[in-house]
Image (cartoon, rainbow, N blue to C red; front, side, top):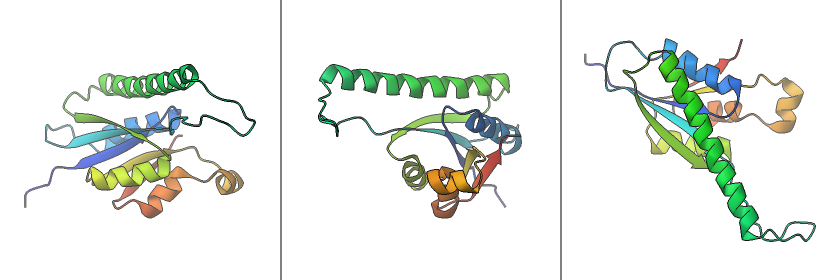
Length: 158
C-alpha cells in the first residue's frame, strides 16, 4: 500500500512553547527520508486596528494605524525567521515548507486554515496554564483540539 504524503500544520507565535512544538514536530513527526510531505507554518496576526474612534473619544490618525500595521508585519516576519532558524539548526533541508500568515482570532483562523489548506495533522504548543487561567483567558490549543477537522498534537514544553 502506497503511503500518502502528509500535510502537517504547525501553529507558531512569539512563544518558546510554539518554537519547541515546531522543533518537536521536525524531530518526531517528519521522517528523514526525502518525500513530498509539506510542513505548513501558520502564524496568526491579530486583527488590524481599524477603529477611527476609541472608547475615550481619541481619533487614531493614519500614521498611527500604518505604524501598527508595519509592526504587525515585522512581528510576523520575525517569528517566521525564528522558525526557519530551527529548520537550519536541525538540518531539516529535506522538508518542503510553506509560510502562511492569517489575520484574526487565532483559534478560529487556525481551524479554518486546517480546512482550507487540507492539513492532515495540526501541531501546537501549549502555555500550560492551570485551570483558572485557562477558564479566564481561554485556550487556543483546547479550542483547536475540539474543533479542528484533523488530529491535533499538543506539545508541552518541558
